[in-house]
Amino acid sequence: MPRIATSSISKHRNFPKIMPQKKAIITGITGQDGSYLSELLLEKGYKIYGIQRRASLPNTYRVDHLYDNVEDPNFNMMYGDLSDSSNLVRVINAVKPDEIYNLAAQSHVQISFDKPEYTVNVNALGPLRILETIRNLQLPIRYYQASSSEMFGKVLEIPQNESTPFNPRSPYGLSKVFAFYITKIFRDAYNIFASNGILFNHESPRRGFNFVTRKITLGLARVKLGLIDKISLGNLESQRDWGHSKDYVEAIWKILQHHEPDDFVVGTGDTHSVREFVEEAAKNLGIEIEWQGTGLDEKGVDKKTGKVLVDVDPIFFRPTEVAFLQSDSKKARAALNWEPRIDFKELARIMVEADLQYAEEEARSHRPIVTQKRYNINGSKRKPL
Ligand code: NAP
Ligand code: GDD
View 1 (cartoon, protein in one colour):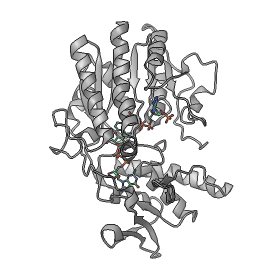
View 2: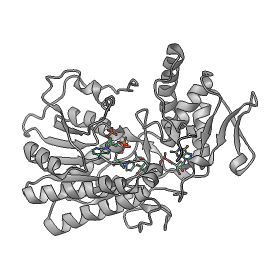
View 3: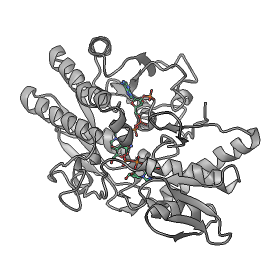
């Protein structure tokens, strides 16, 4: 399993002296945000219960550093799945948490076109299953729903804030719209403290390998060390408002500490294209990219050597695309006193630095630490996503 980029979490977790210790369930704890949120809540003195789904190979490498000490009573993992109501009822009833952070999802937009029914089951019905459990148990549990800027889809307004209409462009986006509204409906109908964070894209050295930023930073680090010749991408025009996951989990926590349940847009407000992310990542490796050609023939060329380092492969195009996202997070900044600390350039720098270490390890061991292939329908074409 790949090594995880850990941050410096305090060995001495400070427990509040007067307040009783809070208990939180985190679904999706093994994911990017789940791991950073776990660190934050442990630092704040919470007792956490992560819901881990069964996998045929270990899927806990992002949180393994948190339970080095298996005796730690504040870090607990339980098996569960968002597609399994009876399990969710049992876990929530056993823990009786103060807060539930629902981060679990089939979170890859392109894969949601391949697995639409599964995506809707987990991303839309999963939240409903949790909310129904909270409703039936009649416990004062605060619920956080991981909503997404992907819900704005083909944007109807620039920038996007809490009153911008949704216009989803993928099964993933639509599943998140259902989850957003069911959260709001349960809040209004049953007086449940249920809030949505509408988070724009956020990345980190713990990002999944098949999201575009990570694919670029790890890919170009491998190119730099001569492990591969080039990377292939899809839509280079696409623009995203990219921030760092560590900043965003702070907003997630603040949303549940707010005096009332509400919905908040969380983002940097700064938008860049995939092409610009490639340029920035390359710069951190001492490479200047020059773009040549257009459309499917566009290439990112190393200005110094003339070598093609990036090309375009239509296998990575989506059936329908979200071309542009830019947040207006004034509400969260004012009401939650939140703002991002890591900007676009710093994000690219942090990710490249971490992935260069990965690639160096790969070079030393003569084998890739992580591989991810995409197969087409007859399995004949293999490409890293
Ligand atoms: P991620 O790295 O893909 O993590 C997703 C987590 O959900 C993983 O722990 C995964 O488990 C778990 N999961 C998937 N299917 C499950 C199921 N059926 N039952 C239980 N757990 C399941 O995603 P992320 O980037 O941390 O994002 C966290 C949440 O925020 C997701 O809901 C995502 O849709 C949403 N969001 C993300 C962004 C972003 O830019 N990162 C922006 C807006 C919203 P495995 O580890 O076993 O796969
Ligand atoms: N994954 C991927 N791979 N995306 C590519 C590639 C490629 O090779 N080439 C270009 N792109 C483009 C995609 O078409 C998309 O427009 C953009 O890069 C970002 O893609 P992803 O990094 O896969 O993220 P996403 O924006 O589709 O979804 C992420 O952000 C959402 C919030 O807006 C995910 O984290 C979602 O879970 C999240 O809700």
